[in-house]
Length: 161
Image 1 (cartoon, one colour):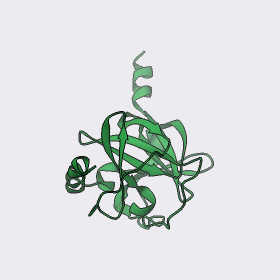
Image 2 (cartoon, rainbow, N blue to C red):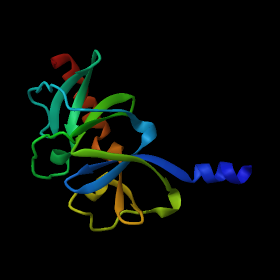
Image 3 (tube, rainbow, N blue to C red):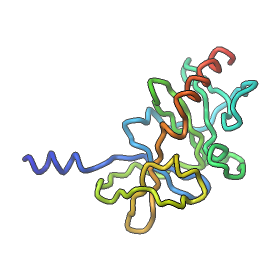
């Protein structure tokens, strides 16, 4: 029985999503929900990577465009576009993605430190890289994607909406 417990602790359950043909993953425990894009209210003087805010069942949530955050070219939203709603430092933030792929379980043993030369995005955003059978999965460090200061700066947007 102890082997099973140890084995379960060696597994990570992730939500994988795509931004500019790269596959990223975040721990499913941080994800509250995945939603289709909805009306986004732009907020004056917001950081360039912030799309605006949405009203999700009465909660005002800032939405960060990961394409802009990672320096990828803009792209029109389509039927695959999703907002991954996460809790980060007790704040709720939406991340705009090109598509959500799957919920996946992987063993911690397939995780490796990020390469020195990252794949077109700031290496500081990468927590680790998982080598899967047919692809690489980039684990995002959400705390680096949105720093504590940026997270606090997003807070006044809720009142502005």
